[in-house]
Image (cartoon, rainbow, N blue to C red):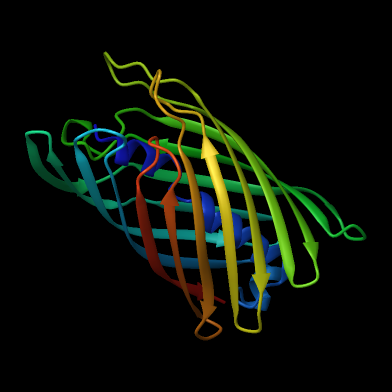
Length: 257
């Protein structure tokens, strides 16, 4: 299995969901008013790319197209997604290309506590990654992962600041041993009239025994095209050999009000 898939599946939604929670909590322009108050369903499709050599002579390039369906309200969110991957590996005498579905992901988040006066909220989430991708082709991790996370968000004017910590029990395919993962992140979101800009630093311990811990810096934006459509884009750079060197995603969200 390619490291770019292992690390990509692990952090696939961390930044967009961190920002999305900030938008709902602050009544951000990219989220319909009805969603912030009562909840709305949505459908989204995201195209992405990430590549890296992870400190080796072999470079991996991963292209993904991911449909997602979910529901977001002020107090909780639910989502389900499954990507389609195209993975190319080259260098070090190796050259191969594979394509197919990746690992599906189910997620549920809940606001645990909110202090209106302090403009602070605490949120929890449960994520299950299912081994639907072909591990032999490098398109999946070969095991079912179960993760929990806790995030705190502090609103200050047009800004929202978020800190996140999580723990993932990593599934192990037959004959392969992985370490469980501790993850963390810091993010800031700035709200404008019809858009939001966010940046974050996110990292985690390595799931590969003795491997380098991934660390990434990410920047992106949400832009409201109408009350029903939102465009999302973000790009990242890897800050360690445990992360892809760089990558980006762009997607469109359709809200159902």
